Amino acid sequence: MMTRLFPFWAILVSGLALLLPGPFLTLVPVITPLLAFVMFTMGVSLTPADFGRILRRPAPVLAGVGLHYLVMPLAAWGIAHLLSMPPALATGMVLVGCVSSGTASNVMIYLSRGDVALSVSISAFSTLVGIVATPLLVRFYVSAGVAVDSWALFRSILTMVALPVLAGVTLNTLCHRAVKRV
Image (cartoon, rainbow, N blue to C red; front, side, top):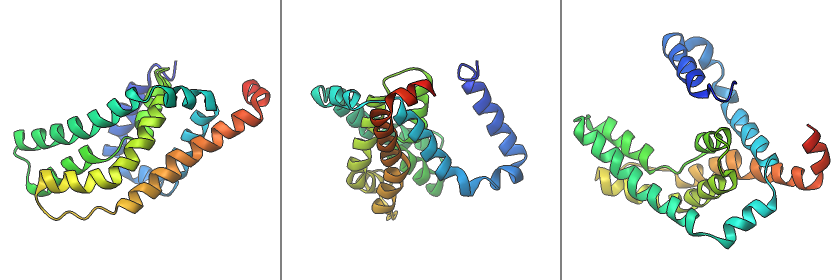
């Protein structure tokens, strides 16, 4: 019931955060560990065989990454221009469109009972591509010097997505019966 109503809860909590930001601001320091924990729990539902299947058929991963870096920045640029956003806001839109997918998309795939291994693989690969693609695409679409700390972006995705998922897969592999019971 809770997962089927996730969009409703997300909108409700977002509205509350806009109206009453104080209590939500106190949660800022725990966001990264909580996201890592969510990714760990998703990793526990995966096995190495899930990723082996992805390696045998890399086309969906390559398509996901390719479409991400072609469609998302172009859509962000188009929306920013369509709405005549000021340069700073347009730059932010394009930057968000150029950043690799991450925890939120993986959570949505998990909740919708989609292919989590494929989603995590696309996130991981798009993060690696993003080290080069994000600064280049931002420069291309914005044509202004916007500094993007590629290594910090890579490290944050590594610590929030890749390592927790790997730890979860490892736990599932080593303690499968106990994990299944939990």
